[in-house]
Image (tube, rainbow, N blue to C red; front, side, top):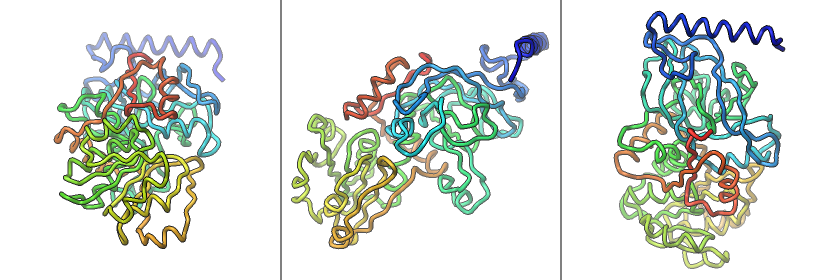
Length: 394
């Protein structure tokens, strides 16, 4: 533990370093960060000061927190976060639904901003670039999964928050509900100028999580696609499928979303206030993607897909568990699978695709102080459809 004298000495050294740099004519990428990248492309070895909102326990209540991130390493970039969006996964993890957590913990795996510093080996980015970070911040980059551009399946993948990270001053990775983030350059993507920061942020999870399986389904004009659960992920799945020419059937438990669903381009909006509402669609669809993040009757939902069709689960329920009725699945004879986000190449692909084809999420921009209210709305299915936090308010 540092003493007060050590703290004073550190502050003194930082002041001397800053003064010397200014005297030498070196300009910092961010005037508030004396550790930031210089025009010479070199970052100092000091920890990065950050502030954001963190969970302290399983209550799921977020409060302001000031903390430090690791220094910018040779292969790292520092991003000044401009916007961070809210995913239901943030809530599940902070509340301990997926297992015990270490606190304080900053959630958030959909963030965009401006590159403020780069390590000396970085060539993919330069200071001032628009960049985004999604669900991963590191992996081994040498295993078969990484070589196959499926980094999310690497045994050594470090996900964006709550994962052990030796280089982190807090011992775990800290997410994007914050003013900045340090990330290995491989795990950041470029954000095209033609899409706004707030609209780009949700693509880093909601976009890639639905884009990856949808593209593997070989969507084409006229194919009948079902989307179950029309929230942050579901509305992106709907828009992406429509953009590919698919005939989309959207299944929701929220009658208030019907008008939006049809405006997004769906052929039909089916309100499943009773499981019997699925019966008329039995065997009608070629493909179904489900974003429901809770327990539900899987067999009944799969029954709407044709025999030998495909059903992909992307929603992550509590404890990661779904109860499956084997008899129901066997009668449907549907190819049931699950998908976890997507690799970094696919993540860049979905950002570019959405920018080029004007496939934008429907968002609500909020201040940091509104985050707890926003979380309640997500749980109560009131979000329309992705909350995006203005990082300037942290």
